[in-house]
Length: 499
Image 1 (cartoon, helix red, strand yellow):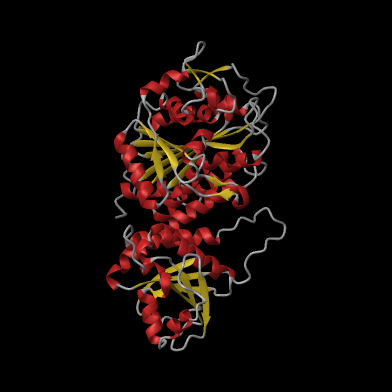
Image 2 (spheres, helix red, strand yellow):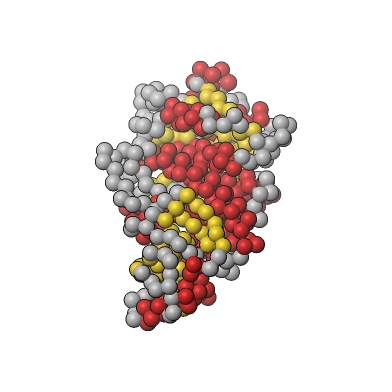
């Protein structure tokens, strides 16, 4: 969709539809009052008839309003003005864009970003508007024989702000929001593809395609022979049960100074996870195509970096494999040797994500990184602990953890920090190897992070468990594109490009 920012009197705008906010008890927002005045009280008269009182989720489309140049006016209920906050603003935007996209207004002027809340500024509202608009119009129909897109979809959205002095800030917000949405949509597309199409080789091909878009991004794909030479025994052990060969995808974005240390993002790329010999229950196993959403978020974040031409060095590393049962697959009790030389007793073959990530983390040492963040749909325990609303964050570096938490809050893609205390490490003790790959029933999310921490001792590191936030189940099943907004905000802040 095309986005633009304008200033001016809302009553003098010309478009297919003008979107205005109305608060509870039929209280017009400031832009709506200006339009009502120009229309000689037409809005107030209509509202008094009782068709709408401004509650959340309400909407009313008006046609041929006197004194107004727009063909239509869409009134969106915003709820109580005192309680109008960032979350309710986002809901109002999503409601408006959904109605516009399903209707016949191919362009619209949106006055909602100018509605102030106590917990946002204009930059945040504008960026949120772009993200919610893209989220509301996203469709995944690549695998349908006869896709049925809207007949006259919304193609242009003009965001109206009242103060010309804030125009530059609003334009930056649109630019950043579009880049985030671009990355999110890529991550969604990859996540929503079925496992027979989105294989490790397909992920590698998509990374190469991304690299062809810019000289700033260099892509290297390591095949199994090269990984074997490096000693990646943990990663390769996971791939043994599949006919699909593993790939290690390395994407180097060079936007900063040549000698500047990079931020490294490591994304789990399990394109399908049946659990291996420790096979998963059959209900909802189809959702295990989403086990590569960590890797997808890394590709999406790199796409955002390219779009914004960030003045920063960023490296994306995605270990990609399938985890299936087979005669050659890992067995409970097997012991493998990781690239670091540490040995691992595999007590549960379904705890495979940490096996591919640990070798990828060791590989990252060669980059001498400023910081490393790994992103993975790692544990069901994280879903139990935090649900779908927050990603789990664990790190032994308080400054890095605070940076990530702040990025999550600012982007609306929030994380919650869990402890990574030394006391949890003993749960990984093994009688036969340096460590076990699971730590028992208690604190499963934390012990998974403890496992990874043993491979991240040579750099600043944080772990994001996105098992609950990466996709939605049920009727609204689909990838969310998270945590691309959090990661992009983290990088923007490091470049000092956001408030």
